Image (cartoon, rainbow, N blue to C red):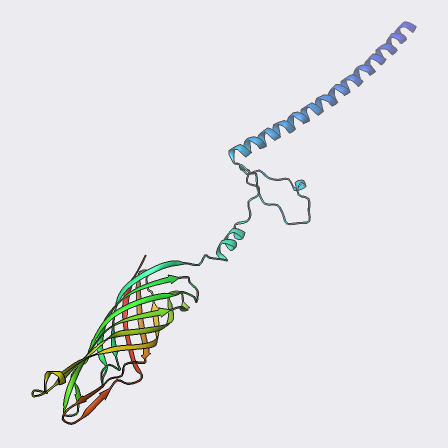
Length: 278
């Protein structure tokens, strides 16, 4: 009986030892399964990252839990969090690049010119324009004109005369004052150089030297030009200005001694259109 008790105590001790070993092996197995689970999760995350699948970032990864909620990270080559779309749109639309380019234009104008004749003379003009467009006030431009004006028969005394003005003109315009997206006002300084041809009417018995005269024409001036661009290539303009002739000839009609002298100040106004490129 004592053997049995000893044997039983021994068995109980062994059983106790076996249960302790079993518990140790169970804990080791649990730790092993946990490690395998973490390894499998890491491999799954790595596979998802390679495939470009969004990965949820756990809240514990953020240092400030009281801050804004984290957004989904786009697992890509850099594994960076994508900013909200509203931030991208506001940053792109808040500051648009200004258009700066060199433009050229060719066009035609019709106008009424004063000063060269006693009445306004209808004129046709062609122009070529180069313009550095900046989208700001300082947008310099340079324009070259060629025009021809011809007056109708102008009464001088009991008879009359016709005047023709052929000239070239240079406009220098340092600024352009924008009114809205496609329109503006351009102030310019200008200078004209040409010839005035005067021819008398109803002078049948007069010598040829007294019938026709050709005299120089020279005058600086100031002008303002309103322009609008309904399309990128079409430009419509209205302009007007004042001239200050430096050559002021006087024309006398004999026998009644009627005269016409070029005034100190003359003017012009007109409208036209041009084609801009590129």
